[in-house]
Image (cartoon, rainbow, N blue to C red; front, side, top):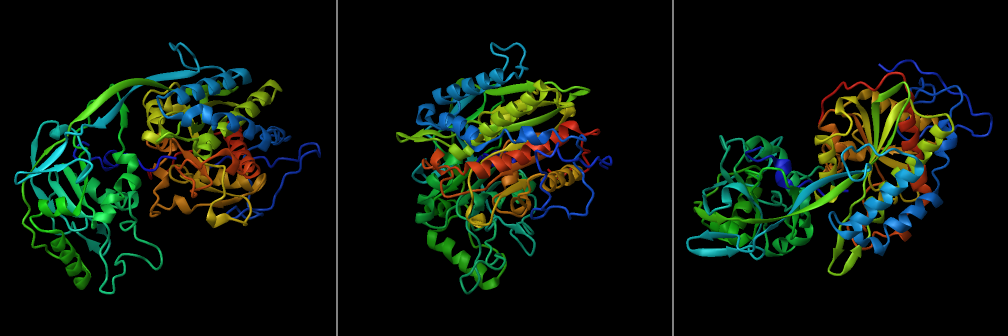
Length: 564
């Protein structure tokens, strides 16, 4: 799972009724349909909403998705030999080859025309790094990249350019507390703001609700993402975010590594981004921009605490000169696609997706990414085998299925973006994307509580999809459906952080399945020996049953909302 979108891309700075179904009968007494409702499932007396045939053939094929089969694939893909599957690197190429051969062996077709391998969708990326010569100069003093600030900058600063700071307090635009209310038109301006959040006189977070932190006070990506909605509206030319303490600034490389790492990636044929200018700066540099000292910044925070609301600042901002240069090195990478043609509704496509890339090798240590997202990748392989066997046995889907293994998710959902920008099958014919990312663990919230899965996005575009999803869960092997991360106010913003989002942007209904975050997330300890394969298989069987229902029903689910 992607930690967060590249923030500037998320900011977009100055650039930018179900048909009545047939209730199935049990399959010849051999397989019992469980009807105990899961958490959040529809009541037992509610009408079923997942279409099925009189003999429910999805049951025996779902049963082929087993812990042992999942473990066999994952033990290969998440082994050290695959070197962490970093996009563009040797291990990623090995993984692409493994997945493509698995699709071919199962009998899936390769749908990519004009490719040297019909299972492979090639595209070219650039590795992008910030030149160490990038600098900020104020009154003759040069501030150094990596020592005084971190930058995601391009466009206007490719040659040295002036910055005239406009201070906007904490950069918060919340109900009851807005630093923007009296700021006027900020479009095209250079904004400076404090990170963290305002406190009360008692030193407690002013905007927190009970024991829940506000989206502005979570160190790292949380505090940045909490500010994104207001910044999208403001449309500044650049944003300078001041870490409140030297200790907080020292944590930036770790907490914001996905933004300010040594390299980023972009599409080689894309125009250089304009206006994506984000700087996280030290207290000293932030103070210099505002014509004050770190003590002056702290005093401003105390004034806000005393007032309990935004206050005017005494700062006299100083013009700075910024020079930010990026280096670009092209390389080729690839998505892997397997296609199973349907019958009478074969022109409509159900996508089952996961990303197969991970973080590679860092400081000589392999980040195997067993859960993220080796678990999703092998789940897609298992479902591909199940569906192809069903078709071989004469029980194939009415709609076609596309099994999509995306690359570059960890770098900003790049593979799924490329596919949705260059779809092999028209997006208007794409019924749904069922995306699987990190389904192999049990998070702290659910330890000892039985089977569960988090669902994200199922109601964003189609209320029918949400209804079908819950009915499918109730009808088959119920697990607890947890919608915590589907809350738009959730600080993790997970809806935007995996490949389904690129389908949702194109109005394709989606469901994102995940078992949630854990202590090994994006660490070298995310290994196969920590995967709960029985729990994973039960989650995968739910996804399979949902895909089966979507592929077999008479009418495709209707898009009746536009929440993305």
